Image 1 (tube, each protein chain N blue to C red):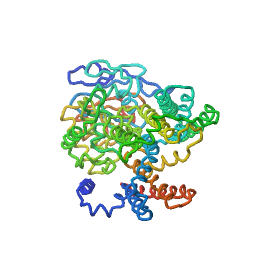
Image 2: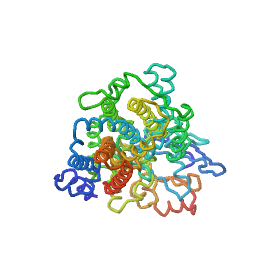
Image 3: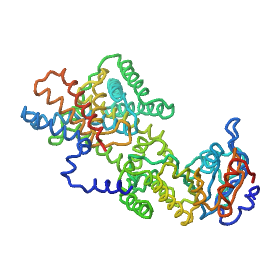
Image 4: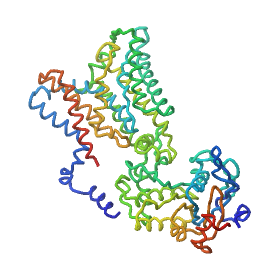
Length: 258
Length: 326
C-alpha cells in the first residue's frame, strides 16, 4: 500500500505528495526514494528512530534542504522551494523544536515577526501597533491555553504558553500545512494536554498537520495516519485507527516489513 | 501557567507605590534617577551649575556623545559592539579637513565626512555579517585602522577650519538649546521612531534577542547587522561635523574618551549588552548624566584627573543595577 502513494494520493483532499525523494549529504544517504502524502484536515504523524530521516524529510518540505531527486507537490502542483521563505509563502509553516520565539519581544511582536502590519506614508512605513495588538488578541483569544496579555514579553511565559504562541503563529496567516517537530517534548503533563487540544483544533479548522513525535501514546491519540521511517526510507504507512502501537514499533525497528 | 499570567497582569496594574519597592523598577530608570541626583547634588554645591549658561553649554557638550551613543545603541541592540565609533569620527573629521583644505564647498565637505563614516561602518558590518567574525575583533581592527588612516591622510597635522556657518552651528541656537543640541535631539527622536515604530527596528531587536528565531521567520540577520553598523558609522560622521564646529579644527588626534563614554552611556541607559533589549531615551539620559558628571566635577574644582575615575565608578554601578532588570 505504500509503494505507490503518488497514485493513491491523487485524491482531492491530498495536500502534500512526496514522490521518490532522495537526498545525500556526501556519502551519507539521508533519504532514499521516500514517498508519502498528507491530507487536508488530518494529523499525519511521522515516526522513526533517531537518524531515520524524519527531520531531513521535514526540512525538504519546509524548504531548508532541496532534494537531489524526486518531487514534492503541494495542492497537486510540483514545488521547488529555494528557501524557507518560499515554503512559508506557499502556506507551509513550521513549529520548531527549540521554540523559535524571541524572548525579549512581546507576544504580539512575535506573532507578527517579519509579517508586521504597517501604515504607509509615501516611502515610509510605520508599524500599525494597535492593529497588530488587536489581531494578536483575537488570535490568542481562541487558544485553549491560557495566554496572558499580548503585550507581555515572551520571557514571562511558561513553556506551554510559549508553545501555544508558536503554534498560534504557525496556524495564522492562512497556512495550509503546519509542521510540528516534537511540540510537547519540553512540556509537563498538563501543558502537553493543552497543546494537544490545540493541535486537534488546528486539524478541525482544516489545516493539515505533520507531527513528528517520539511519544507513541501521543501519536496514537492524535494522528489519523502514521508514516514510519527507517534508515532514510519510508517503510510503511497505516491509518492510525487500523493499527496498533506494537505494529508501529515493529515497523520502526524493522521486526516487521511493510 | 495561570500563575504566570496573573503575575504578569498584576505587574501591569499594581499601584505605583508598590513599584517603588521593586528593584527592577529602579534598575530600569537608573540613568534618570542618577541624573536627577547629580543635578540636585551639584545644584546645591554650586548654584552656577543650574544657571542657564551652564545648562546650555552642558547640552552642547552632550550633543556629540548623544549622537554616538544612539549609533552605539543600535549596534548593541543586535548583541554587537562598535569599538570604532570614536576612530571613525576622527577619520571623518580628517576627511572633512582635507576636503576643506582642498577648497571644496562646505556642503561637499560635510557630505564627505558623513560618507566616510558610512563607508567604514558598511565595511565593519559586511565583515562581521558575511565574514562571520566577532564584532569585538572587527571593530577593534577598525578602531586601529581608522585612527591610523586619519594620521596618514592628514600627515598628523590638524587643519584649521574657520567658517561662518560652522561658527553659527556651534554658537547659535534657539533659546537655551544650541544648534548641536537640537541636531542631537532630532537624531534621538528619529532613532526612537526607527527602533520602535518600524519593521526594521523590530528586526534589530529580534536579531539581538534570538538570531535563530529571527532567521527562522525569514529575517536576514546579516542585512540587519550591516545596517546597524552603517547607522553607527554615519552618525559618527555626523558627530565629526559637530566636533569640527566646536573645536574649529580637524584634528587627527584620537578621541578615546568618546568611545568609552558612548558604551558607558548605553550601559547607563539600561540597554542589555547581550542584545534584544534597548531604548533610545536611556542612552540619551546616560549621555546627559556623563556630561553633567564631568561638568559638575569641573565646576567644583575637582582635578580633571578624577573625572575618568568617577565615570568608571558610575558605569560599573549602573551595570550592577541592570542585573535586577526584569
